[in-house]
Length: 305
Image (tube, rainbow, N blue to C red; front, side):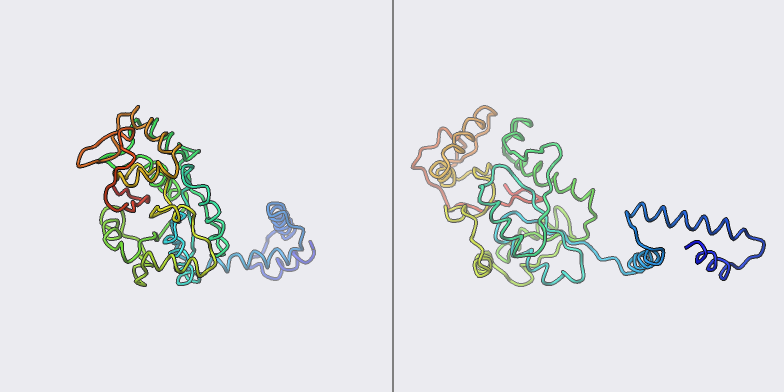
């Protein structure tokens, strides 16, 4: 090997009076150092070829990165699929989820099924200040549950978690699961939060019902939470809702969650539900009280209230 390198140096060196032996040794040392750093045992020729391939790859135009924020709901699942189909060859695609402990356990099954469907790993982004991603911990720490300022669970477990993720990963574009039914929310998001979004579902005029059909056609069982009457796959006992209908649905389907929210909101002093125009505590809500249709609240980078 030494003789071959020495021949190459001698043949290509442009100056006189140089120490060929010393230069050759330096090159060999560089090769050995490179091999150790890469944990390689190949020949110098193999190493040179690998390095050349690496340098060639650096000459390629760098792809922009699109982050699809997957919420374990059908709309964001379809948004991820459409993004991959349209931009998979021209962009780096990251599918990112902000896990929350208080969602239905079946969301994890749905996430795994969607991951297989997409053929992409779903990355988890968690706020380092709340490693358990538990909304109960957030409420107790900030002594606030919900109000005109939004809900702290969204701010800490979704919004802040995403900001932290963005600090470590350069994101050029964002995709969320806004359907054509929600174009106004997409518009508000662009105005209030950021403009670098790609409304993939809106661009294709896809509705929420279309998303259900697409996911079911793919052979994926919908999250159980939908079959129980909930409009989305957010946390059970979403504190953004003021609806008596919603909270009595929680009372009927997850009584332990209703009890937990009632005790905690009373302790913190937050009247979560509105009955006949008046805010009341959950433990004051009559079991037969009803309100309007259950609203689908966003739990994303910004907070609907």
